[in-house]
Image (spheres, rainbow, N blue to C red):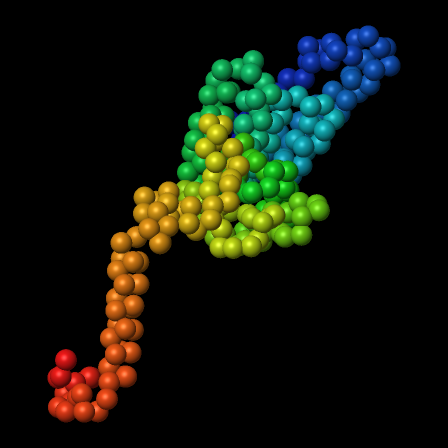
Length: 273
């Protein structure tokens, strides 16, 4: 959808207040002015493209402006362009960066960013990645998204994705395809170091909401579920007892002499005891 005009776009002013840190050096001060001027030119070009509905072109200009002069307010502009392109995950991340890096920004602008984030979160999915190995690299669709343990779940667009978890020096690599729908909350459990046995991964509740996990053996899983290991179950020993009695009975019948069994039944064994 094309949206003409600059409604909702941050009016970024790159003023002297942003470059006072460079005042100690005349050359650095001059370079800061040059960087600011370049950023203002990129910003003006981006605003025009945004007003024309060319969000891709506007985004490129805003990114160049930020690279030249990293004013946090430019992150809001980038988020607006991402939103126009329906790149919801990147829009949310840009809004979050704006809020984090510019806590003194205009209250109305910060409120607008939060409002957009709430609306966009309903259009994406989240993936919690847990692993038995700390420091493993996590990538989704070839893009690095962090290391284990993650501080919080990752956001992804609805549809098919490839999750890769690996660490240098560890032989096993976890590869998993996911296909979330909007609003879904998925978990990817990556076992990299210990491979023997049908272990499960259990997220560790350390109070921090991180992505740490522990390996859980089947007998421990049974015990934690309230039933205990299989050999502690009543029906296990009942079956064992039945098998033993059945085996003894069969052995007695097989070893009897024919004269001990004059009237065979139609089933198994004989009527004489």
